[in-house]
Length: 230
Image (cartoon, rainbow, N blue to C red; front, side, top):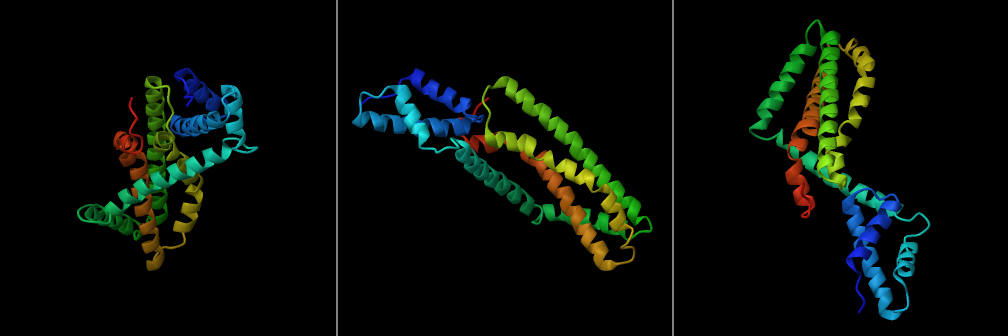
């Protein structure tokens, strides 16, 4: 049975990159798929050249090429990332972290129950947003430094270091709305309770996204990709 040579394997990697597959983990999956398909074709037709077999294998992906495979991989990695995130978030509602969560909630509740509700709410919001921007810039720099050490892009790695930053612009765009809302619920117990819960969750979500998960990046990547190394 004919087997692919190392140079042909590398040609398949180059072929996937040429067709807009940037991440090494997905490239490897597609190369394995193409290689198996090519070797299967050679079982029945030994006259097929490598290029002919490769192009036939690629045509099976349809008119959009690898786009569907990219989308499926992104969904799978996003689910994995969110599973990590929710696991971290749930810990903050268990002993002993729940003590910190309740303390944070009490700070917000007492602040929003004061005479300076609108100013404190906007102030807290801006502090969270500025910290998020700072961490986003810091994580992007870390990501670039990691790329200097390796020429391989991993989809989950990019999510860990870059996905969280996308939420920062959303937060900043809502500063004016926070001021308008907070100006109206003075003395309203239900509104103050709701706003305190929202700010507590907002703080935890940003801390987990920008601090905890990136700090565990090496462990998460090694767990997901056994072949991962810097």
